[in-house]
Length: 215
Image: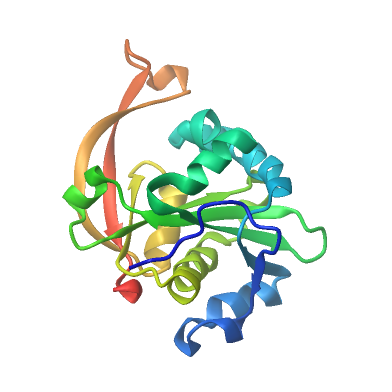
């Protein structure tokens, strides 16, 4: 059973290739060569970075609850960290500027997710700072989050859901080794006026995937 943190920490863990299984070391080494380090654990002082990313247009389009409910401020973040037994939060930090280039998390899957991914016990999510988009950080950071979750929190059977029209995210997850399990047609809120129906929504498809390296 996974042992996720459920609160803030004053001592985040800087993960290096030697901290994970040899087969999982490459994405950490690759990111270090490019000037980034993966950090596990969230300080209260990191919340402003997460909130800023959550409020960016691309994240708000596909994940509006990030800024509305999850990473709005310290109280909502504290609640998110404790959700369903805890959340393992990872930041991708620039070694030069210490800026958060991306963040993501793993935690116990919801009942809805388990209904469509019955083989997966835990869920995964990733957000890229728009300043760093286009630098192909999604693939190695996705692999690093999965590997870090296995090594630090004993998390296994990790899956995810994403929207089919979010092409960069889909490519990153598939490139990181995720396998498509099933799909489900649905509607989501959209901030693009020309796509909105009377309810402010657009038809899309949910993709449900699993990371075989975590099984």
